[in-house]
Image 1 (cartoon, one colour):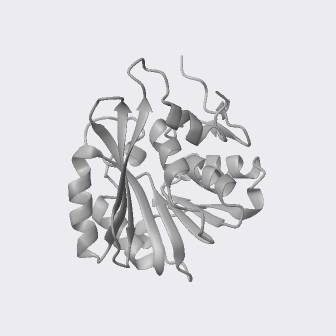
Image 2 (spheres, rainbow, N blue to C red):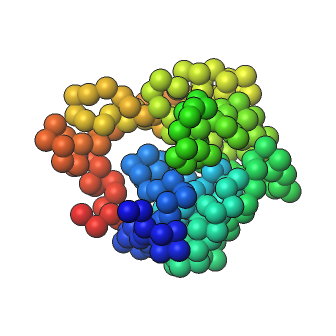
Length: 236
């Protein structure tokens, strides 16, 4: 039986915990990887698009003590949950959650880092986490065009997408004068195929840095690089 929505589940990290709900996309590997691998270290003013529980914003807040982070989501329930998670964290003074449709988002400032774990499934009959999983309210073009509008001239736009979607994503990004500066191939199992990619873009042309990242060894245990990278977050 599902846990009642008024009794949220908790996912504990070393410095914060995430209250979860059946109505909001839960903590997953994609979010953790983006939160720990994205190039947020030098940013001061950060925007997360589609924040869900607030996981990525919290990880960035832990990694970057100087950052002020705005997290928006079209799902009101997700925004309330993220607000609770922010308020319960040691980073609460630097985190804000807003109930906002990104397509009508109109801040008075630009951001030097924008991050998103976007919906990437085509619209389908599934009823599970529809807004978070399907391109119903936010497709790649909406996301990229909005990021181009709100990113500073020297800022970085960081996303995680499935392998089958990355070429399409890059093609659209190029239409908006976004240049790929970093590409991380996420390999689920050692020796296997790339399942996800973390892509980072800038309005400034630069060499594209490409690396591979293996999540699990053939034994299915977490790889040493995953453990090393996430040890400040996970309790292994």
